[in-house]
Amino acid sequence: MKSHRSLESVTVIIPTYNRRSLLPRALDSVLNQTALPSEIIVVDDGSSDGTRDLIQTKYSSVRLIEQENQGVSQARNRGIKKAAGEWIAFLDSDDEWLPQKLEIAFEALNQNPDYLICHSGEIWIRKGKRVAPPARYAKSGGYIFKECLPVCMISPSTVIIHRNIFATIGLFDASLQAAEDYDMWLRISVRYPILYLPDLLTIKFDGHSEQLSHQWGIDRYRIRALEKILKSPYLRGEEYVAALAILTEKCKIFANGARKRGKLQEANFYTSVASQFLLDGTGKKE
Image (cartoon, rainbow, N blue to C red; front, side, top):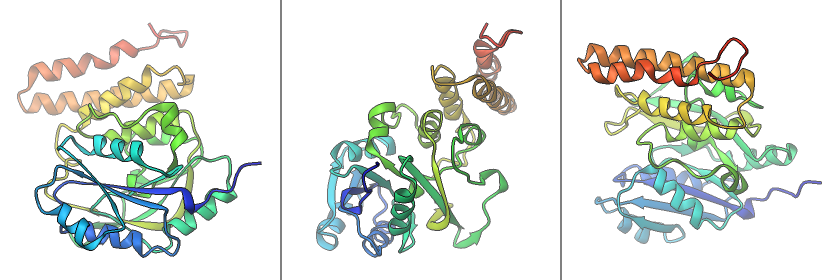
C-alpha cells in the first residue's frame, strides 16, 4: 500500500530575478492556500531590485536562497537541492495559484497513488486580459510523451512532483537558455505517467518584456532537447518515430527562418541535424 501523501512534506520553490513588483502576488497566493505547504523557498537569481529586502521585511516565514545570476534552471535546481520536502511544487514568480491548488492536488495524488507527478489546468492572462489557450496546448494525462513533443504543454507553475523523480532522471538542464521545462517534461514523460487535473488551479501571466518564449531562435533549444531524448534508451519504437518526426519538422522550420534572416551557415547546419537519427527500412537507426 502506498503511503499517504501529506502537505506536511511539500516545498514550494519560486525562482525569481528582478521581479520585486510581481513576487508578492505569487507569494500571497501560496500563503493564502486552504492547505499550507511545509516550506516556501524563494531562490533569488541575482536580483538588484530589492528582492532580498522585500522577503526579509514582509515575508519572514519564507526561506530565501540567494545566488549570482545563473538562470532559472540553476535557480530551480538550487531550490530542489535545498528543499526539505519530499514533494516539490513549482511556482514562477510572475504567476499565482488559486486558493485550493494544493488541497485539490494532494487529494488527487492520494486518490491516484501510482503517480509521482501531477499538473493541472490553468487560466491564461495576456497583457491584462484573459485569453483562451491555443488548441495545440490542450492538456492531458497518463503516458503523454507523444503529446508533449509538439509544444511545452505542461506549465511549471502547475506541477507538483516527488523528489525521487529528480533522483532518477536528473535536474533541469542548465545548459539550455530556454525550453528547459520542455526538456524536463520529455525526460519525465518517457518514463512516468503524469496525472492531469482539469481544475483551473493556476493563473499564468504572459506578455512580459523579458520573456524569451516568443522570440525567434528559441526553437534551437527545443531541438537540442529532442536530440537528447532521441538518444534515451527508454524511448520505444513508436515514441522514437514520433520524436524524430517533430525534430525533423522543427529543424526544417528553424532552417527556413535562419535562411530568411541571411544566416546561411546556421540554416545548413539545422537542415542536416535530423539525419543522424534517421531509421532504415527495418525500423532501426542507420
